[in-house]
Length: 400
Image 1 (tube, rainbow, N blue to C red):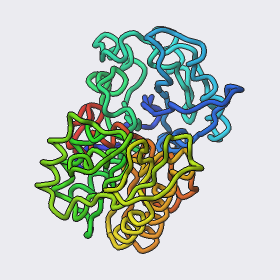
Image 2 (cartoon, rainbow, N blue to C red):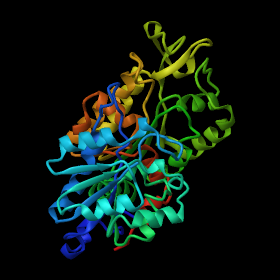
Image 3 (cartoon, one colour):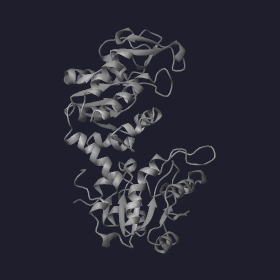
Image 4 (cartoon, rainbow, N blue to C red):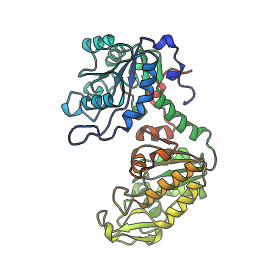
């Protein structure tokens, strides 16, 4: 998928010079209490694509979703604050229109000069967006002469602005961020340098089971952390106290344990407490000694040491999901240990990939983003890609 999809690099100068490049970006960013963008990571991630198109003489029209409005305009979900931040980041004229489709929007795209940018209003204000409505897809296609999807974080959604529009606005190609995401994730799955170590965390095995199944044949080691480890502990006959366990997934866990052999690495100890907010009462016990009335909220120090050694000795590392409740010290120690080990592995020449979501947040919190080979901008999209599923926003694009 990563090498077969056409990108903006494949477009000729004639396909861009003076043309309207309709670019789907992921500007679903957090705002502070004053209504200003508080984390512009996703905006800066789209700048290379926007800049390359502008440098090629294109007129750039941006489509993005923001928040979860119910298919109708809501003032708090307007992209106006995002436009304000984009103006600060991009030394080019940036215009904003409080509409997305229709005569005024089409006229605004045609009035745009080469080298200028127009951000249109939230695509989710349109009732047909999330239904991938065909009539809306055609309306969106009227806004551009070439379609570029650079929103990897929304590529797993078959929406009008991510998949439908590509049927009617051709050429339809990937942007530089999309290209980078597919190259790193696709490369890890198709041809990883070995040892290839994957780390999966989070609360539920049910949410990661397809990833576990997809990765097991490919990895040398699969490290498990987070509350999902407790379902495995229960399946092994250990007491898990008040830890989060999925009783309906115990057979699945037993089956995985029997098939995976020594590829599957579970924590050997746990950081426990009576409650999530009782960090002062936290202690470390072996995995078979979690007492009744207590719960596991992080992997223990011995597990962190084991995981650190496996990660620093790897040549390819893929991480999705925290090792514990990383937002609440002292239950952040396991996640922090993995983040530091990933940074050390990168320094050793390994390819290190963070699969978006909470792992990306944890790495950012530790100030280690720049010490990873790649931090994915799409949690859900990266999971579905790793599961081997088709991403509608990618399969809608032209192939080489």
